[in-house]
Length: 385
Image 1: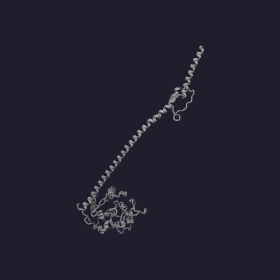
Image 2: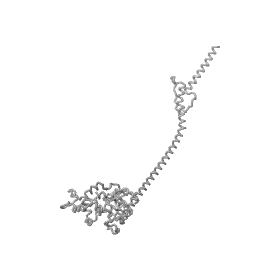
Image 3: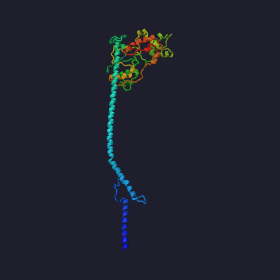
Image 4: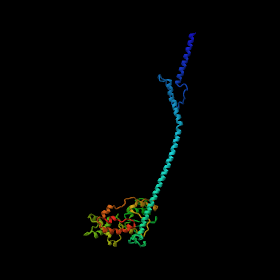
């Protein structure tokens, strides 16, 4: 009886032990829903194989399950609850930043536009005052206020011979009269007049020129009316150089027939002979000065023609820009760019070094009306060296 009871107790204890082992083992292979399970299709769950490795204890298995099930779920929740809020906040901040930046850009552009307008207004004011001063200088001299006398000051326009009006170019369409002075950007200004008047046809397009720089220089000079330095030296040698040499060069015998032969032989007028020619009373009796050394008041007649704009070579770029705007044609063309023909001060010193002071003063008197009319200072450095 005692033995049987002992067997029963042992059986019961053994059964309980087996049940406990089964429970622990089943838990190890996920038989129980002890932790949140995910759909295998959407989880990081991978079936685990049972090994004899003693490290695979229930605690180890639970830790591994936690890492594969809970952590991804937590990450998923974190991504679905926090990221949308951050994204929305960032988008709002970016939008706010863009609006602020756009406003700053607009303000900057407005400020730049305002500054440009102020500069334009200021420059226009300066240009206007400069033009008023130039025109006032002409009026003072022409009215006799400065007691400056020169031929033709008081004559009427109708009294001017036609041959003395050949430097006035008229554009009826735009109501412009331009008086050109040789070697003072006249080629480019003539090009502008050609484009405005549409008076020359481009052989390449068959239409009037629209770009001043495309107009060939030789087409804008009327060779039938004027001798120019653009023509061969032969013209000047025959008409002027040979005369200067015969009169003031003490050349014995006959002169070479052509300029090329004369230059090859070292025979050409000097600067002093040229000035002597200009100051010779006989020169004025024989013919009017050539346009290249004729006084401006005899080319353009400022006392008879009331000019609205007076340009200078020294301020060519700003004058050209200002004038085209005044004429309201700045949208049609721009003034051609190019090298300006300027005389260096060092050249003046070299040229006048051999000229007697008396001749320098006589030469100034010959061109003094131009100095006074157009507001140029007296060249004391040349007259008193």
